[in-house]
Image 1 (cartoon, helix red, strand yellow):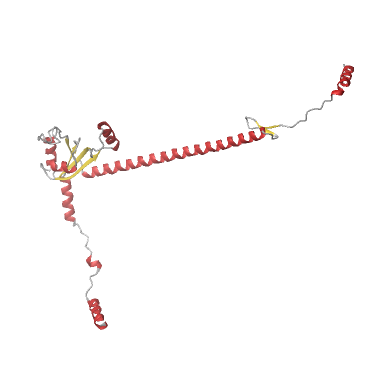
Image 2 (image 1 turned 60 degrees about the vertical axis):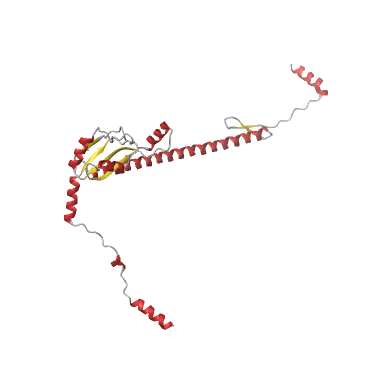
Length: 246
């Protein structure tokens, strides 16, 4: 029985084992000619600017509507500010409003098509269907000559860095203000403890101590004095003595 198991194990060991390096996928290498063709295609592309995005319209909806006139390669819509969204929700009294976008950019495969679409659709109705939510909204399009998608990505990255820098500066200012406030609180506590000790010391001295403290913090020494003792029998003699002196 053991011999049969050993033979099976030996047979498994004799089977060919695929190397891990061979099972990995080889990286795709782009040839020089293919890269030149891709760069040439990028130069032929054109970008449209959308000045206003109607409510309830997102990137997929924009791409669907504008793809009817040509091949759309990329779409980017900029979201509204959080502060603007809060103001809008406060004005409408509804917190269930979805995302809204301020402006957008659309890239066409052919710049001629992009220019023609901007000239023909600008200031025209988005749809003529009365039941559509976009009925009555107009396209606000403009063709951007000599504008490439790289410019947009650089702009977005720059704005993101500016926002992060502003947030970092605000955090530093807030941290400094908190530190200053905590320092003032600690200084106030120290002054309160000093004043409390002064009051305790003053109360103790008033109760029978040898020294007292005035309002300026200076010590005032007090000495106990015994009252003079007067004998009623010596009064006539004292008056006689005083009369002779006068």
